[in-house]
Length: 236
Image 1 (tube, rainbow, N blue to C red):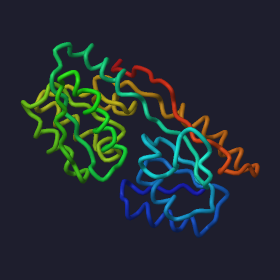
Image 2 (image 1 turned 90 degrees about the vertical axis):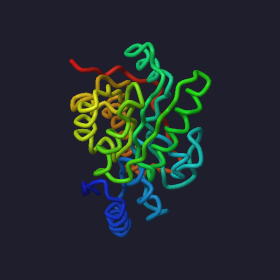
Image 3 (image 1 turned 135 degrees about the vertical axis):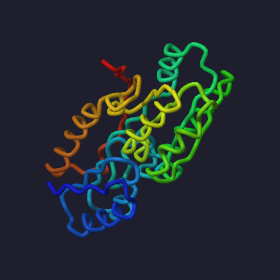
Image 4 (image 1 turned 180 degrees about the vertical axis):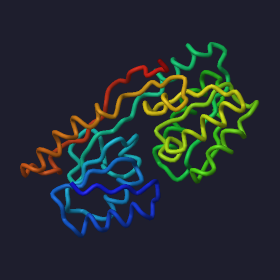
């Protein structure tokens, strides 16, 4: 196993993807949307197995989640419907009217989540106040800009925001803003709770996919899939 970490840099992810494609391994496994897009752009022949991607179709990794892609790409989506996450927010704050959302505008998984949130919440007369944080260094200031404007902050599977969650927690504490998340790893560093699935639950079925590819099964015949539900992860 040749493990490489792009450290949240799209440029580094592109370099790693090109090197992996040139090495022609038996398979390339990618975590996060930016890394997956870099690898899929780098090779059309080496089998690619993506993991933890909110919307593989919008990210143009696969044409559909309903059938084999017909390409060298397959994998697991970690998309969870927003409805149960909203129900969690309402339980925590029954008078909820405004939800803050800090996101990376360059991440398709974050922008599609924002669109889904707005579409779901508009009929309920609940406002989404979104603030873009193009760099991880922008995250803390983005959270602080929500002071007095929202009732709570919701964070999704945004790689930039999750990697800077200490800054999210620090800023949220300063302005006394409750944090609710979709990523299980953000509860320990500061979120009140998250409705999510443990990433282990994504890794196991993808492990079976990879094993099949190593036994010469064609990725083009392996359909992508997604989790069907989530679990409450809370501070203990």
